[in-house]
Length: 418
Image (cartoon, rainbow, N blue to C red; front, side, top):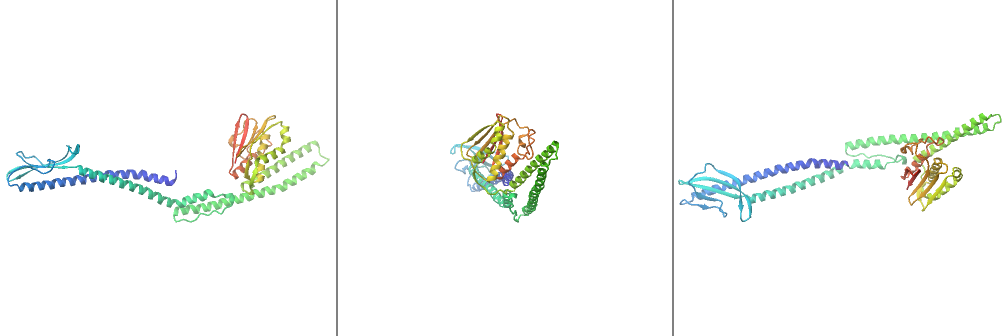
């Protein structure tokens, strides 16, 4: 969950109970005020009723309201105390039970005892309370929406420098040697973050450049002594004073030197790929590349009596550096031949956006997760340097293409998706 959404959610979680509590308290405050107002009206009508009694020329009963509930009646039995209460009475007009407030009390005038009954319909007060409550509820809802909207807008504005920093970090590629510099912002914490990231990325960039330079220099420097060793070995092998044992030792040294030279070239190639030094890209048909490379391995395929199955149904045009495309396909075909069994099969298949290369063979002797790890190789192939598949993976990663592996029906399948 995004930080902006999380803060908004926390505000919602906090504000809902607070608004609910405010509504609850407001309801009872308003209801209490309305009830007090109704009681004041009852007492005012009671005082008016006493004025009416004092205006009588002779004792009499009188109806004070149209519904006949409020009245002044002659009484022989005084009330022990003034009665003030709420009750419900069925209203034949409304055809429902309605809440009323009742005030009953005695009043004596010219030695005549009167009972004054003041009865007020609370329907208007209830409707007023409902109206106030509805209005208050709408107001609370609008306030809540406005609060959340303003909080979201303000938070988004405040966090804008942070998201800009994230966007710049996501688009930054150290291999492109871009100048990475985050701007200063008004928020102190974000400014500290940007300053720290600027220092960190500069340090990473310097370390990367030094590592790249060291690797390239080391690879180039190794080529000269290796060439000297090979030349001297060739001269030594031409000597007539060597025994068979000496020749075998020299041959073993020469094979090791060749392997070391191949390792040096591969490591230099990996460094160039990682540094994206192969920038000349164009559209290439991988079916043509695959056919040409297969022609280079015809003799080796025949020697191992391998059955070659080709299913090139469509053109497979890929935007890639031509040299890297040849290395890509060549390494996979070499891998399919090297790890195959005598009399096994190799299958190449293309679709509109993928190339699959399969070979028969025993199940993996290493974890599948280690297939593309450098210098991780099968125990049965000691002549391999363990760099072929890692080289393939590096090329695919540079172009953001994908490579997957599957073992099914005794077939190892590498699928390149473009």
